[in-house]
Length: 245
Ligand code: NAD
Image (cartoon, rainbow, N blue to C red):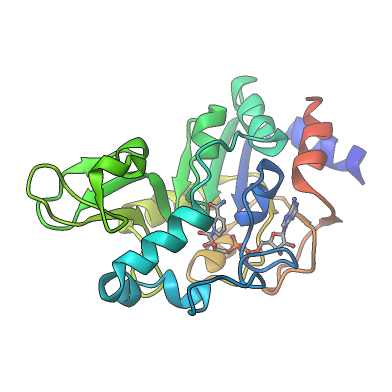
């Protein structure tokens, strides 16, 4: 199976990678829906994680949101793993590699990928809800910029909101258009580390018109996809071995 996959990738000129939280578990960031995921983990906040990471909850209880967010969703020490690095390597070797990610951790950027569509935003971009001033991650992690655990704008003292798409919020139209256009142009589609349960993101893979669809996931995906090659296993280890890193 891996040999066949290696040949397909070697021949491919435009790889499209569609990934989710499972891509970063080998970097030490927990996903939502697998056995070890955050949805199964008890937390001390008295709310379900899917409730906390919603638009309504953010504005109703920003202090609880931020306590959860800092404790479970921000991993400043995380580094790209072999999956992120394999994609960057293939791009460096001359292929077009379009990365469409549901992740908010910025690890594809950090690995050096140049064409990344972050469907759900990024923890590295943060905006004041009052005046719109933007802040990086170190600013909101710095205790002297927070009050009651909530980061505040130093210009107007408005509350800062991470530029991540919370449940109940729409995706950025420009990012969607770029991602769907890239998917529709690719000759090989690799889907990996995603339960394919989060919509509308999971639906975008339907725009693929190319040759091979490859699925690499640890557990059976919740959303259905017709794959030419399906491999069950850790995506970092698999992609890394194919890329020879
Ligand atoms: P999910 O949690 O719903 O599903 C993750 C999937 O990845 C599971 O099917 C699991 O079996 C698989 N998986 C876990 N580790 C794997 C590995 N090493 N190799 C291969 N497969 C592996 O994730 P989702 O589909 O991305 O949807 C969850 C939402 O949560 C996304 O929208 C994302 O924004 C957000 N999220 C992001 C991060 C992050 O940025 N790293 C982390 C948690 C959640």
